[in-house]
Image (cartoon, rainbow, N blue to C red):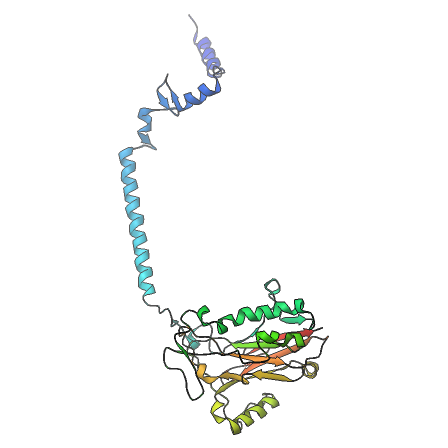
Length: 334
C-alpha cells in the first residue's frame, strides 16, 4: 500500500503531466462543448446560470433599472435643451452691442484675399501682363461677388429686394439691393482692371446687429486726423448732394510717407463710403453687406506698397496696432 509521501509524489506528477494530444479540430470542438463533462466553454450548464454571483433574473432586473434610469436622464436633458432653445431667436442674437463679445466697433475687411495655403498673408501680388498670374485674384473676386450678382444664391433674396436710396430706406422685412454691375472698371468683364496694372480691391464693413453709425455729416466738424482729400470730398458732397451726407466714409492711402507717394490716385465706386440706408443691420432674410470698390489707378510697379483703409464714423475707433476700424494690406505689381 503506497505511503502518504508516495501519494503526494504521484499527485504532483499527475498535476504537471502533459495532457493527452488531441487533433486541432477536436480540441476546438471540445472547447465549445465537452461531451465528457457536458460543459460549454469550460463551464457547466449550472454555472452559466450565475455570473459574478448573480443569476439571470437578477441581471435582468439590473438591465431594466439602468435602461429606465438612462432613458429618464436623456429625456431630462432633451427637455432642458428644448426649454433653452425656446429662449433663442434664430434672427436676433441674445447679446447685442456692448453686451456681446463683438462689441460696437465694426471691423473692415478686403477682397480678394490671398490663397488659403497662405492665409496669414495680406499681400496682393501679380504681374500685370500675365493672365495666369492675376487669374487667382479675379477668380477670388468672382467667387466673393457671386451672391451679389445672382440673388438666388442668398436664401430669401429676390423676393424682398428693395431699390433703396438716401431718401428711400427699405421697409421692414426688405433689404437693399447692391448693384455692382455698373461699377466700371471694377467689373468681371473688365477683369477688375487687374490686366491694366490698376487693380480694384473691394471693402466690406463687418456686420453688427442693431449697430447704428454716427455720421460725420458736417464738413465743419471733422476729425483732424481725417485725410485732407476726404475732407475736401465731404465738403463738395455737402454743397452738391446734401442728402448723401449720412454715409460711413472710406479712405485708402499709403501707410507710410513712401507708400503715399507710390500708391498713386485712388477712386471709389459707387461713392466714397457705405450708404447709411443699409443700417442698422437686423439680420433680415437676404441681406447683403454694402461694398465699396477701391480702384488703384496708377500704383508704382515693382515695389511693395503698404495700404491702410479706414471707415469713418463718430462711433468707429481706429487703432492701427489692433487693426480696429481699419484694414491693412500690401500691393505689389511686377
